[in-house]
Image (cartoon, rainbow, N blue to C red; front, top):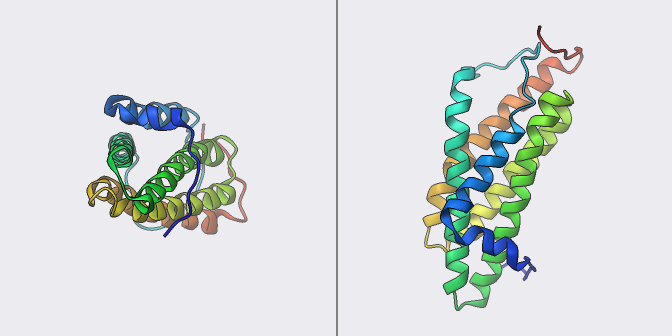
Amino acid sequence: MSSSIYVPNFMFSILKNPVIATALPLGLGMLSGFPTAKVNLRFPPGRPPRQLFPILWPLLYVSMGYASHIAVKAFDISMSSSDRSDLALGIALYYAQLSMNIAWTPLFFGYKKVGIALIDCLALAGTTVYATKLLHGPTNTQATYFLVPYCAWLCFANYLNGGIWWLNKNRSIANKD
């Protein structure tokens, strides 16, 4: 059982509209993706083709946004103080993970801080998995269906980020021309 947490009303209001709830992470994700550049890195085995990322991330952003909408709807109708507490914490963690998600691209590509990006990615995955656990029961598993693919991708992203950090920890990371 989680403790009660205060989430400002406007943060709930944003997520009540499914279009806004899905557009928020999609728009922020697209904006954070602009500082990407080709960098001279060694990659671990299993790296997906670059062409997959512009297809996968919009789907994940829309999915996480819709899960947040489901959570707010469940909060609005819940009579259980325990469920409301879990939902409030889950929604707060949703915003926290969204912030960490948006921070990752500038950390990794813009500042070329692969180690700090890895720490961000680990915290992001842990936060998202915990938020998914909190939202599972109160949303009757509905939010979980939308968040599990994102959780799985974050686990894989941690493998990639960790492998890149390990394989390049003694190298200078520069942009490819």
